[in-house]
Image (cartoon, rainbow, N blue to C red; front, side, top):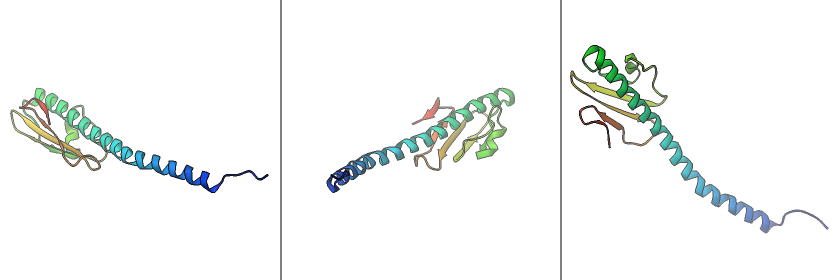
Length: 118
């Protein structure tokens, strides 16, 4: 008697694997996008904290773009792939951050409106 798998058994296993792949691949890309968004949001919050620390010393906020923002106190580097811009004046600042592989809409921070804007 020969031992092995029949064609029906192999096709059944392949169908199950295909169904699992069809379910998991879209979920994986969603999780990945959310992770990139978390990086951008984290950088945005760090820049907001650094802006407030800068304001304490300089009595004004600082405008900056991307890696130029690392001159702010306590901010050493941005996450890879995150683009960030801060528009500031003497009394307030607005900032936005977005990861290249994250959501199409950037995250926004407005110091006059209480922080993170939805």
